[in-house]
Length: 189
Image (cartoon, rainbow, N blue to C red; front, side):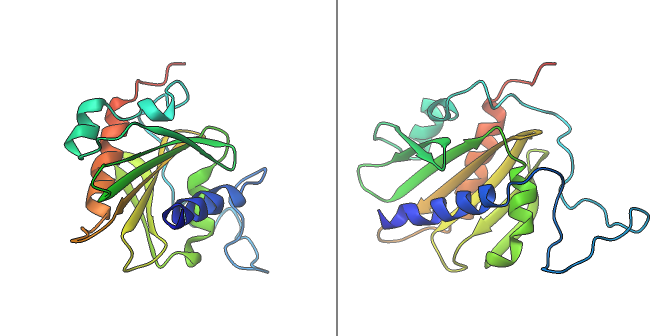
């Protein structure tokens, strides 16, 4: 159960900043800059939107992709704060993959607003899609990618290395996030 806490914290952080309107000031009492001098948005728009809403979380990774990552146990549906999700693990108990989907909130801006709470935080891209990489513990064995598939369609992918000989988790997390984006159909409309 303890290993679920980081993903709950990451998703809670993403959803806790939910509000109507745009990004909020990053510091208490901060005054928003005028529109003429406002800095550029740290989160770029999605240029090639994908339809995340139409795919159940446990189908975001193909069986071959899961097998390549040594996932040999059945998927388990998991929800965190009303966000649908899925978790996979292996019989050897050496790794876990978790995905949560949010098709309501502006997750990347919410996570960005809470960037000071993460020991590892990086605005990045996953195959051209805006993303934020986080770790709740700099030396930890869990890494998360929050990836915008389309406006208000975001998935949070977490990879955790468990047991002896733990591997650095951000490389596998990024590769899995790339797989998810590649599996998504284009957003029509």
